[in-house]
Amino acid sequence: SYANFLLFFPVLTAGPILRYRDFEKYYRNPRPVTAKVTEQGVKRFIRGMFKKMVIVALLNLVLQHLLTLRLTLPVSLLVIAGSYLLLYFDLSGYSDIAIAVGSFTGFVLPENFKQPWTAASFTQFWRKWHVTLSDWIREHIFVVVSGKRLSRWAGALIGLATMIVMSLWHEFSLLAVIDGIYMGAFLAFENLFGLTTADKRRMKKGVYLLRCVLVTFFFAVNTLFFTLNTEQIFAVLKGLICL
Image (cartoon, rainbow, N blue to C red):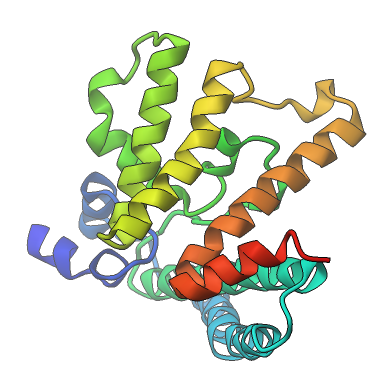
């Protein structure tokens, strides 16, 4: 069963990360593959393929065209938005495909993206974006502090370390370390100043929306590290201060 787990399609590649205990549950007692399950799986597979083969391809063309223009503030903002959308549709498209393929064999795979643009803090954001990777990092690397009451400084350092590890997961390079420090700084800031949670019902609508926009924007800047080369990244960032 463990050999099957290692070779299981979503585990073997970069899709929803299924824990072994969850895999074994469905491996021993798979969900019945009914006509309804198959229909839903086919629709989701098509949706995932459309994201990756059509939307991502078009966004990539748009992004490459924008990079040929003079990078001023408006153009740089468009590049950042395009980079965010490209990465989102690429990863969520693959997740759709993996979840669909899993359903054909009786497995129920966890959702990987849960409307991340509705997160008003980075702590909440990582519970909505590539959820299974965030959960895996927390469970396997920082399990020693699980359930313990942490000081704000300890929480800040753990958040910073988490982001560095997650960045190195994607690419083992100096740029990945810088990216991890960039994202980790936001988690550290939220832990230090008690901003990890944001209750929509208790906040003014304008404040909540502003926080959602800021989280989405700063993460969108982060996506440049995954869609552009180093020279292009610095050119886009420089363009943010050029009118």
